[in-house]
Image (cartoon, rainbow, N blue to C red; front, top):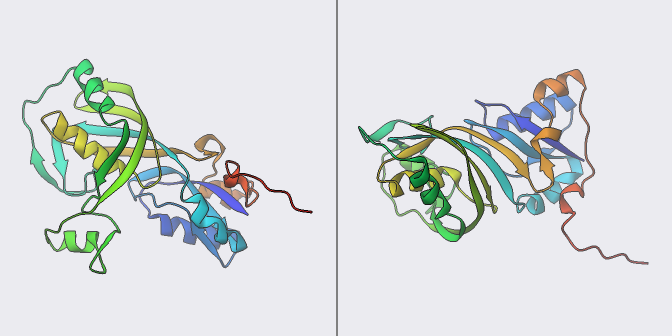
Length: 231
């Protein structure tokens, strides 16, 4: 079975999985796509034998609501990091901001952020970044289907991003800041959609404690796959 969990802020995705295993009293579980500690929202968790579906579910498209702050760059590209660059007296109009973010729609090569689990010579990049090591970060192809401006109140803005698997929204925000002639980092992040799983239909850890939740069939996330019926 599958669980559509609304991950709380301040814990890792693996911490969330551990909490689910404890609350549901199960031995085997795994998530289908990491959310940073700063992030909340949809975290699809496979339970028991459904873990065999995890690889397929991790390929589903995503949607995020992102609040970003202009004028500051952090080493992690989000508010959990250390401010490493700052642009004083920076200003941008709503029209200019909208024009810039629209340039990031479509297929593109995206640089993996320094604080990520991607490995270099067998060592995760985040471990190298913590040591201050400068390494060449790989590029990966992603597809950003749409970026919509929801709120504009400088230095803060809120955008909705629909994208393919593997898209680093922290890198997207960092790139947006640079293209504006300034800097930017994420201050709040919510994953609202993973394939057919929506945040409106997700359950919190508190819901699980109260027994107020519903598990989903293992093939719920495979509705876009072709179906073949055998005799």
